[in-house]
Length: 481
Image (tube, rainbow, N blue to C red; front, side, top):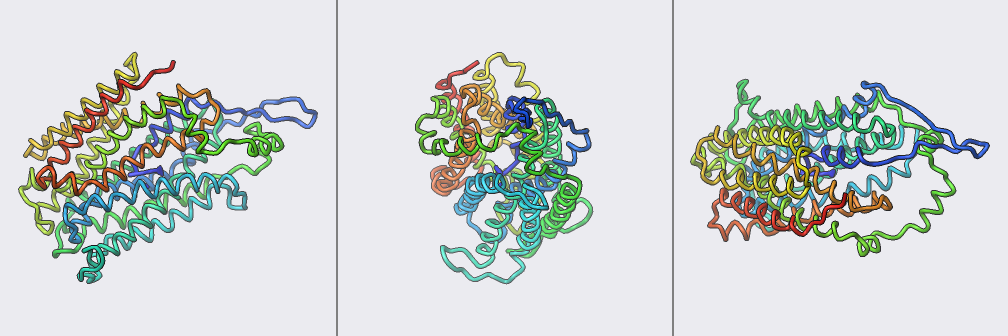
């Protein structure tokens, strides 16, 4: 899930984290010659070769954006109570936390005729396509009777479909990040990840806007009670088609390095690598010896990612009630609000891209962090007081500032505090500071909603307060130059 991958998603986003990390990462491109002298292995890729490496990510991100913008809408339409919605959002971060490290671990050991990462890429995409076809049809299967935990059959079908969708998207997402690391030299990494970031954001915008586009061309945006509107169904169909076409393009165009060439490109001595693996400390030991910055930035992460979990979960209900004056999931207004969620999420993505250009202007990372979170908090809180759908553009544009900071600054602060040893292990552990807050927030979502009077717009005020708490937590972070 959403990968992280890595998650929801984006989003998804993750490309900004990767860009920040890998642009600073130093990799060796020295290979030992047979006469035990060192020689430099150079292999520069053309622009289109780097484009081909990441082109499939465009399709994967469309699927991820469709999921993040429509899951609450889908399950509310299937009959989920607003107090239940947050429970469905536990799955994306949970699957990302489980799947992404495993894909990295096992693909490191995979060498076959199809490649090293490509088999996982193709398998994940094929499963994702099948699930994207079935998931939006959950309400058309006549599973109306209530079963376990008060959920009807349609919701249970949707729940298991969501599990498979999150898993498959994460399986398909991870190889793109790893292939750039595998095949691009140090001097081209920044360019390669900027291309991936561009394709990722483009995919997010397309996925967010699909439902309102199909409504605009005349496809129905309402359906009988408990049935997903055709505009959403066709969005998932088209997203699935684009996903598999993009992935097949990358699969056909990219040829991964064989083991010997890979070892030479990265300067790997097989014997030394084997010895390092034997002496490598476990993750628990590394966690116990993690620098203080790991924990302090992790605390900031807790407040930030919990806030965005509530945005993803409750935006649909809040906008429907605030701007369309309805809570009836079968009404035209509620489904129109569902389309508008995609639009304002796209505005947030644009705001994030633009604010990312401003962040380097700050001399202090901590100051940039605090200012970004305060701007985002203002955006969240303002939503509860806005009743015009177009004024929401300003709110979500402000939220984009917090999103841009969350994608770049935590990993910058952490990597500056590390000495380079066990960098990958610490970053993998740090991914838990993204997933765990979402799981906790989702588990407590129903309780918090009751405490704020059952009004979904108030959950976005809670999100704003969480970002303000994150600002205070930034004071605990020490910058390392």
